[in-house]
Length: 173
Image (cartoon, rainbow, N blue to C red; front, side, top):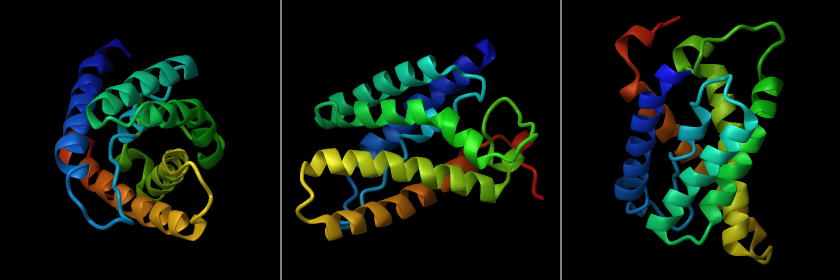
């Protein structure tokens, strides 16, 4: 796990810069806000303990909050994803399946990975947008915003994964 630290640090900075410089500044519409930053937590090694996932999630979200001025909303959402990640993996993974060290779209397969990203991103964005809105007044528009943002976020996360995965990890099945 020690040899995974430089890779994860590089991934953290790449995702942070992509979120800050590209995705937070591109205005798709008022209903579509893609977030690729949760990918940092979702790609940490499988054996990462829950307490470390929560700690890394909190500080990663806090870093995003500092630059975006979102007063702790990303920190809370990333903390939630760090807490729920082991449970989510145990639910969507078939019993007796052995995986590599890190979640990998090529090793786990596209279907598993889309479900994994979709559920985790839905939880992240639902929590984030509910805290941001602080009301259930326009629930219909909030649900549309969540659904469209999840679709765009998962699409950009998959593009990010395919662009920045190493050639040796690529296995086309």
